[in-house]
Length: 229
Ligand code: IPE
Ligand code: MG
Image 1 (cartoon, rainbow, N blue to C red):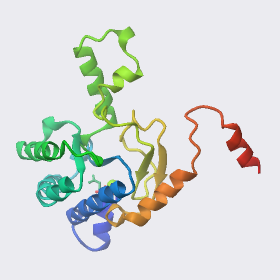
Image 2 (image 1 turned 180 degrees about the vertical axis):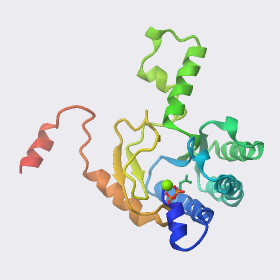
Image 3 (image 1 turned 90 degrees about the vertical axis):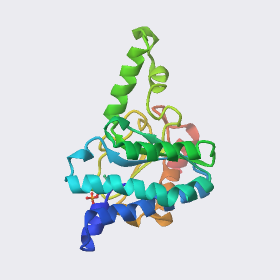
């Protein structure tokens, strides 16, 4: 969900104002995904590396999470959204941890869409924590395969993402879903996150619909024919 800071700067507003608008974009997007039958949406809200930002912005973001949970949790819960938080909860405040727990427990029976919020998350962090837990479980080297390691990953309850969207114009993955995005279709858009809405979502879905997914195999005969016609 990139581009909040630039969106605010263009309006001569503080960066945290952009993050605030970003929360509204998130609520809009999760409901739009649910309307389109998408069952899993995972968003990158705060990376393991975002602690490097100025203290004022970091504390603004933490405060915003508390405000967002109290403002939107009721609506999301009523709309059938199941909320899960993925990331290292060790470093966040007790208040924030409690808010996450409340968001998860009050939505745990919902089935319409699962919104996973990656917070204090990094793809490399996830791989390391999965390995650590596998070792702590006494797993032997020959017992470890991709499926087994996946069962220790933070998003083990969700299928791998089919579509990976990055807003804000940067052309990189920035340590998001490194393990899970192995075969995701990537869509990059210049749209700044606070402006993301149904038009951008549908444009990304249309791009996705044009992609031929082979997962390492050769193109199917029918796809080959279609290409030469
Ligand atoms: C949001 O956008 C990402 C978060 C870490 C919350 P940015 O804050 O990275 O916005 P830009 O890139 O400065 O515009
Ligand atoms: Mg950015």
